[in-house]
Length: 573
Ligand SMILES: *[C@@H]1O[C@H](CO)[C@@H](O)[C@H](O)[C@H]1NC(C)=O
Ligand SMILES: *[C@@H]1O[C@H](CO)[C@@H](O)[C@H](O)[C@H]1NC(C)=O
Ligand SMILES: *[C@@H]1O[C@H](CO)[C@@H](O)[C@H](O)[C@H]1NC(C)=O
Ligand SMILES: *[C@@H]1O[C@H](CO)[C@@H](O)[C@H](O)[C@H]1NC(C)=O
Ligand SMILES: *[C@@H]1O[C@H](CO)[C@@H](O)[C@H](O)[C@H]1NC(C)=O
Ligand SMILES: *[C@@H]1O[C@H](CO)[C@@H](O)[C@H](O)[C@H]1NC(C)=O
Image (cartoon, rainbow, N blue to C red):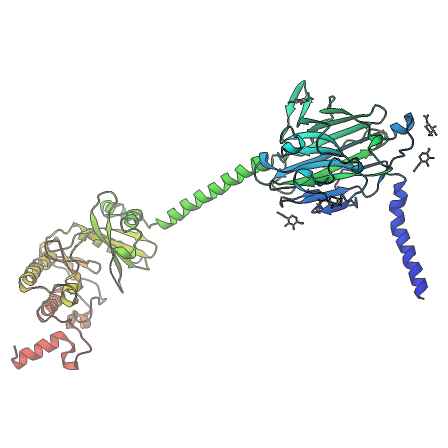
């Protein structure tokens, strides 16, 4: 049973291996025009076949070697040295290659060599300038029996390279018998080629055993075989070759590297190698097609730049996006651009923050064009409802001018946000003076100066303006001190306008707890009297040096007004 199994295995092995053996009798010609997937090439080092059949000898990894050899040796009969014997050394081959440099097209490395050598493995060979063919101890030895047609992209003085872009014929050595700069002759012109351009190119190698002449030509992949070869080198390969030789490619990288590709290959010992059809060759990996990095790279940079620029513009556009409606045109002078406000406040930076609360935040800023100091109040608003009226009122407020009112300069609208721009009051709010221990307390002279102007400011709002303006939020924190310590009523964010003689329509109670007049909570209708009530509370606040509501005090003292009234009724002073 075991024996049977063994013989079966042997039979199977014979069937599998007999196929190439049969082929061996015919290995005088082959052609790979559609990739190397079926070729069974002997691969060494980092050489590999891509799924589309493309043969990659090396990628751009540094100090690497890649070998690819036809699986079966070519048989020469070196004992036949008469005419017919010599002619049997003739061969013809052509292949299409591409080199895509890692960084710049003029800085690839190190190259490809079409190689005819007795062993297919080239064990112990070195990378870099040795092209995977020799090492320091084997270079130059006739025992190598090696022919190489090098496509060399690095100039190496040691081996007398002519430049970093040449074709050379090497026998057992890297010092070429003959070499020439990569070029081809076409239309009576000598045209130079850049091996590492990334463009596919074709190499034509013909050896005539009778004449002992090796011709090498190089062209772009799509050109026909040129009439004049680049190199025409006399050499007797019958003295070099052994009976069994392998044909293939060797390639290496050093600290400079390229992708080294073979796209197609044909070989013939009994005539001209068939031409390759460029349209059938496997494609180079995406982005490395003809033109290579030289075109793709700048293109990528341009695209990336364009994307970056448009993204930046988009971000800027988004950052500065505002809401501007047709009806706002009439308020042109009061309308600020968000970009200006953003720049003025350095993007609403914390350093510029003057205050923050349930209403939103206030930042100091310097307008970019006029260099005027302003305070920008940012409040959130959700609905469009009432916006038109609101903006109309803001615009009216902007026309209010009084030495005891903080000047509203204008506004700006964004999605969900509203900005009110006021004159900047360098001394902040009175609130801060009254209740902040760090600030110097007001002496009575200053206190009086601050307060004395305020009633005329309120009077201006209520009586002297063409409309009645209800402030609706008079309180210590809304009284601001200018550079001369004059008190000014500020923050018209809640103010309502109505014509003299009419009554305001609003039924929404706004204001601050402690300042709201008792009747307001019942009627919901603000009047000049409710503003005056708030003002009175504010006066008591200044006089008593305490807030209108202090819940931590005993209940009878919590509400300032009730407490003062009680004291008044008791006859206390
Ligand atoms: C090159 O190929 C080798 C083997 O396939 C792999 O290990 C290496 O990462 C590749 N290098 C690059 C730069 O792609
Ligand atoms: C070489 O050619 C001679 C004469 O044709 C022949 O006798 C000999 O067997 C050949 N050798 C090989 C290895 O094929
Ligand atoms: C070459 O030599 C071999 C034997 O060495 C002989 O068989 C063959 O006929 C010769 N061919 C010619 C063309 O003279
Ligand atoms: C050079 O290659 C030969 C043959 O493979 C090997 O025996 C030898 O050790 C190698 N020498 C060096 C210096 O790598
Ligand atoms: C083209 O010019 C180079 C020198 O630039 C020379 O080595 C080469 O032989 C010339 N090729 C042809 C086909 O004339
Ligand atoms: C080899 O040459 C012969 C004779 O010219 C030709 O018929 C054949 O197609 C060629 N084969 C290849 C693969 O080039």
